Length: 407
Image 1: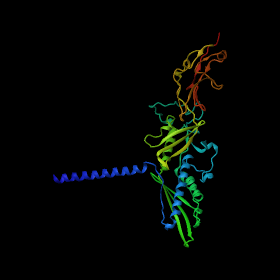
Image 2: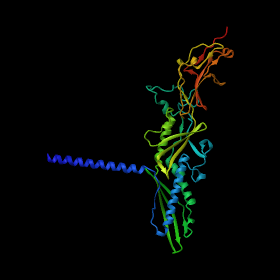
Image 3: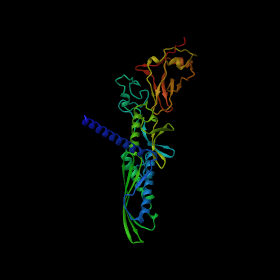
Image 4: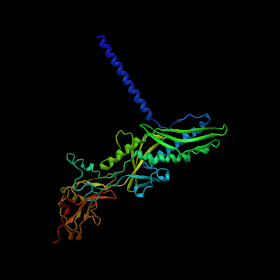
């Protein structure tokens, strides 16, 4: 019995130790992410003490350049253009939105169709399909799978670094980290080369910048080449989050991008710009020098979708000349629609859509001209102010109002 008791005691002690280790690890990782995640620097090369001011200057300058590039990437949707020091070609105006004097690229565009996707009303968004599908339908997810509500242009984290951030830093290190700040030294410098090492909680920048430094006062030459800056910001994490919500937003019109993803730690806001808008993603834990890092991209306005109008929704009422008719007389059920951009949509009933003749909310009095062209086909739709989706028939039967001829 004593032996069994000792074994139980040993297992309990081991269990307590394991729990304590897990708790310690959790708090260590949490502390890394909390608070103002300031830039930390490591001087990666030992030098004579008289060169310490120069090394400190270079480290601080490299940190500054890195932060400038990171914020520029965020504001401009993952791009730094050629004219700014990156390798990204300047895009045609149709590929970006000018917002607050910043070029923000479209990363959600209007659907180009294909497959079963239809881009034009009245068949938009899917030919011969009723939207929304019922939850019990075998086609319940077919509508979303086709991605008829937009074309996402996903972030490429590696391209964003290789084509934008790295060349920007290499150029700006030469321009901003000027060696003639130290006239007491003589310099012979090669070209800087930047490597980016992302991790879960930070981004490390290694700069290989071979510099020969001659100290005339003592007639000695020193060689330095390795600098390293550590920025506590997880770029890859926010890029992956952005891609996830873009996929959701372009496949499910019911998804409100402002909700983001629960428990993700990121907040999402939208900012109207004409018919389009700019989406901004930020996290309170991702900061540089007290300023929130924000990743932005533009959404092209996309058409709303009219929910299916059944034939039983249309009244079989006969109207006569000089009779006042309202929506409720003709359409028996509420007109419903959904907008993938969260725009406010307006319901419409047309007596003559081609000529823009809308049945007003207050009602309409039928004229002799209406009677003379009876029967009248009505059309029902929803509009976001720029695009309209409408329906004029149910399967093979048109929505007709019967207007008896005057004897």
